[in-house]
Length: 268
Image (cartoon, rainbow, N blue to C red; front, side, top):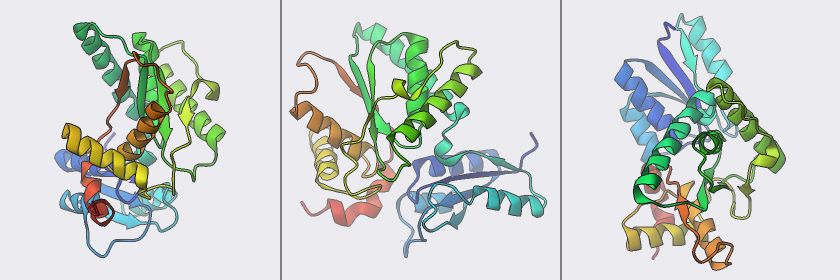
């Protein structure tokens, strides 16, 4: 394509943005990240890694959904650059294909272990993970129910977000020449655990992070996986799953985001 710069967006502690910055560095491309919020007094977590990886950060205040990406792209083109745009959170058909491939790997692992899954639980935020798992589930015929734990109560609404996920899933299926078509009714979202809103750590997130760290040696992040596991624990306690059902929690990473939340996590 002849591009010499990458432009994408996410929240301040976006894992997607940090990974994009790393990929751009490895490819010798300039990377521009449009991050929601204001610049922190001290760079920490993914923000520190973004800077170490050489990314240029554009702080967008209350516009934390990548709304300023077109403006940054226009400015770069005016400077003679040829930018390539990755949508907010990397959530499009190309990004979702990674999760389709991951479901193929899960299918292989299940066959080796002679195991069947009843449910797959994961954090659902900008839609790409959810859409990719939906398409991958149909491609591999894994019979598990997909349960997306919604992370942000400031979405435009459950139906609108479900429609967004379905659209990404349809784009992904078409890319793979699959006949499957999706509507919002195919998208299962749990909205019961958004707590104080995006990035606000509450008792559920703290318990999940501490429990997994101290019992399993597994680190969860405060924004996505901590919230999703907190919800999963509550569902288990409420007996929303059968005693003999197999549940897979899909860990989407995010360890660097723990460090900016140290004050909220070190009071125990």
